[in-house]
Image (cartoon, rainbow, N blue to C red; front, top):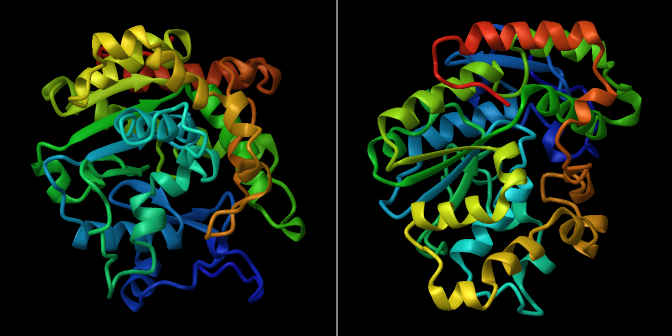
Length: 334
C-alpha cells in the first residue's frame, strides 16, 4: 500500500511509507496505477501523485497561507523548472545578489534549494507540524507542480502572482522518462520508453494528465492575466531576453534604463544558462536533502530532442491526443 519495499538506506524520495496516518488511510480509497519511480501513483482530485507527494499536497492545502506579494512558479514536470527557478530567483533578487557577484547563491546552491517545491520540500511529512516560513523574505518565491484546482485555496483567492511554464509534450515526456530512470535504484531496472509512453498517453504521469494540467492554467490565465503569466519553454528559449523583461514587468520589478545599459538582462541569462549551471561543482557532485543527485536535473535543455527517441507512430498518437484535448481552447504548442 504505497510502500516502495526498499530498505532503510533508500533515498527519501522513495520512502512512500513515511506519510501521515490520514494519508495512509486515504491511499486504498484512491485509483492507483504503476508508478514511474516509486511503486504506485494515486489519483487525487483528478491528477496523479506518488504517496510522498500526496502527503505534501494534502498538508500544503491545509496549512499554506498565501501572502499578496508571493510569487509561485508552477510547471508541468520536466518543463525547464530548474532553469526557471534560477531565472526568477536571480530576477527578483538582483539588487541583493547581483549576477556578477562572485559568491552569488546560485554558485553554491541548487536552484531547487533556493526555490523550494511546496508539496515536495516544504510540506511533505509536515502534516502535524507545518513548516515555519517566517525566514522567507518578501516577495516569497515558491514552486509547485500542482494543477490549478489542487492549489491551496489561499493561493487561488490571493492576488499573488503565478508564473506558469509548460513544454511541448513530446520533449516533456522524453525528459521525464530519462529523469525518472535516473531516480530508480539499480535493482529496480529501467522503464522502457514504450511502457511509460503508453502511461503518459493515458494521462498517468506525475501530476498528469499533462493536457489537463496545461489547460487548467491556460483557462485561468485568460480570466486573470494580472495573476497568471502563461509561458512555454519554447518561447523562452527562442527569445529569452524578451520574456525575461516581460517577467520583470509582470512581477512588478521591471528593468530600469540604467540596468538595461549595464547589460543586466544578459548578465542574468548568462549566470542562469544551462552551460553555467550544469558545470558548477554543486550541480555536478551535490544532492538534495531528499536524495536526488543535482546532476539528474541537467540533461540537455534542448528543443526538439524528442525526434531522437519517438517513433513516427508515437508522434502521431501524441499529436492526435493533444489536438483533441486542446481543440477549441485557443492554445496549441508550436
